[in-house]
Image (cartoon, rainbow over all chains, first blue to last red; front, side, top):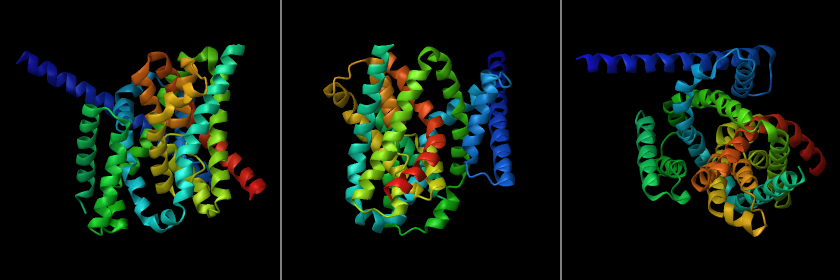
Length: 129
Length: 227
């Protein structure tokens, strides 16, 4: 019985921590959306919210421990959230069929050039410093 | 159509389970969930606006996840404070290189403006790509699919390509994988060694910060000069 109550208490604590974390994230997101629509910013609201939260963490206004219970599941499941956005690619099949070579070349050359340029520069900079 | 959301969840968890068993970048669970979703949309001739409505809770969670990216960014900046400037320079070069190379390829092959804008931010994690692509007037779904596929390509060829070009420093290898191939590249670095993993995570987080700041300024300049 005592073990069950302890387990329930643990779950309730975790749920509360998760809610606090998601409330903080939502507050930053809603504030960014409001600012974005009020001042007609072209910068995406979730990114403004991310930068604002980063600054709040740097300035010590928000503690990392308040956020971790909610951000860990969000970040580990993040890939799942963009599946519907990517699946809508089906709408553009004629464009893809027409320009498949552009997409194929980008698929191999963009990562290859990125890998080599970043890797080479970092190796040189580290060697120099 | 109400089944769209639970079916996506089910497919994702099945492919994730399979990926954990086989552990090959070719079996990337997101890639296969997208393929399965596209096949369902085509085969059952499903209505796209209804599908969008049914899966709309994902949009809110995606926005929340973008805000949550501030946490890994904060953690990595503290860990790699001493080399932050070097890392920033290298990652910024990677962002510029990805935008420039995709734009030059697309321009040489006569791609329309909307497709060029869709290929402007391919080296960064997908949620950031979606937002930047929409901001530039591109097609978010093409950008998202390309980013995931680029991650898979980078995971397969990454370490071999880097060694081929004489890049054997583990920090440089990790930084290149995280900066050019985002989360999937970072996962490859994590599987290889701890040092590369730390640099890959930092590069991915910094790329998520730099891309929305650099690309919307750099891309119009590129369009102005290259047409």
